[in-house]
Amino acid sequence: MTLPQALSFGIIALMMAAFVWGRVRYDLVACGALLAAVVVGVVKPADAFSGFADDIVVIVASALVVSGAIARSGVMEAAIQRFAPNLSEPRLQLLTLVLIVTVLSAFVKNVGALAIMMPIAIQMARRSSVSPSLFLMPMSFGSLLGGLMTQVGTSPNVIVSRVRGEMTGQPFTMFDFTPVGAALALVGVVFLVFCYRLLPERQSGEADLEEAIEIKNYTTEARVTKDSPFVDKTVKELEALAEGEAMVTAIVGASGRRRTPFPAATLAVSDVLMLEGDPQALDRIVSQGKLRLTSDKGDSDAKIELGAVEAIVGPNSGLAGMTAQRLSLARRTGMTLLAVSRRGKRFRERLHEITIAEGDVSLLQGDRNRLPELLRDWDCLPLAERALNLGVTRQRLAPVAILAAAMIATATGLAPVPVAFFSAAVLMALSGALPARDVYHQLDAPILVMLAALIPVADSVQQTGGADLIAHGLSQLAQQLPPWGALALIMAAAIAVTPFLNNAATVLVMAPIAASFAASLNYKPDAFLMAVAIGAGCDFLTPIGHQCNTLVMGPGGYRYGDYARLGAPLSIIVLLVATPLLLLVWPLT
Image (cartoon, one colour):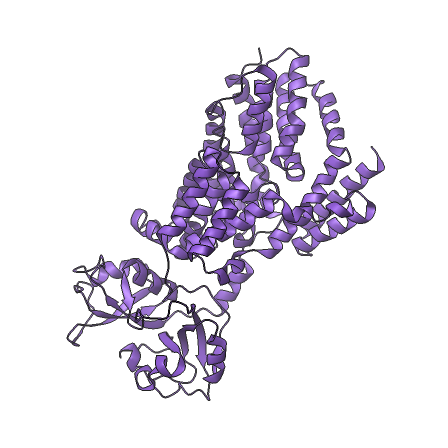
């Protein structure tokens, strides 16, 4: 072993120890490893920041933006309500989510399948009052297992197919991977559904902050439109959209007459409904019920970017003691009152008739560029910004169409994954599916910096010849083992080195070893090449070996060591199940 190789391995070993220790944030650990690699000379200064232009960073950043746009559209919430309205038990939710993402990943890029399903998982977690960490890592692992089932499911399968074509003149076909891949996916899904408790329950920092300022009893009002699917339906049917988190407190008919909102009361066009509850639940009632907030006049200047903010009415505020109607709020202040909350108080009057008091929490809408100034002028203290969609105009078809186009482009080979997903992210912003101001809120900077810093450090293993050293050692060891032992060794090695070489590089390094070993013993190479593809496609041990694992790290609040807690036993299961199956499906002679 040369000095550069020893230094490269040493830096990676220390970095892994720091990740597991967990006392220093992961992005700082990665940056420190990069600086150390540059100082000792295993990474050239010119290559130090090459990771920021790497495809993996582009894919993860773009997928975060795309997922945010899909979540904002409300399409996923509508899908949950339509197809799984009573699915509330966490284990059943987990089974549904993992199954869907696993099957989708067999036919589309697994990062795309995961981006579609992440908003659903987060919404289901909210419904069941559990942490999203319960769902997201199992879904990521399910997406990796699903990718094993077809040639297009994951990059290692494509590369291994090409290697076989170069060796034998006949590449693997689309479904040559299916017998073993489907069996692994089935066993893996069963493991994930029954053993997910190996994961500790985590919360992202953003979630903790939201919980600290969570307001549960907002009051707002909305009008039943002629397009609402709940015309001539009952109050109980409309309230079902809120899943117990919001209710109708009063109904005002078109004539101005109030009606008691009994569960069996029938809704009519132009009825005004007084609504009270959690803002997310209120948003579901308004958006999925196709109601219209009475504060929405529908004639705002299209050039104005509207924003909503929660603010506490201060002691010297000109709003205190006034009603929105008496104050002519929108005309005099440039702000519209969307909802109001007062601790221990249930309002009976109409929204514009409520007398605003000091300490009330109000949800105000206005020109986003002027809101800070307006809040100062009216002595309103803004709360920390939260992702509230009540009163926000959203597009439903555009984000779904953009994501579908990106996935079709990657599946048909029209565009590589980074280009397709970057294009989708840009189109989300240009189309207004995700406001340009919110794009950067979706990007998880610590995750992206960690990835960008780690890529040149991992590449140093190959640049210093460390990968060739590993390959030589494996080749020597494999010669001493029986065929099944060599097959298992090659698969285990591929699983172990994938986080540091990335899955494509792992295949390029390991496939020649596997092929030469098979040739030296006069065996067919198929089982060994398949073993390499499976090992390279199954990075369950770290958040950095595959973009799907990285994608869920921030939203799930995971730590580096969490992946091995669930991933290590899953890796062992894959190894134990795949080895005999490969020998059965792809005989050596």
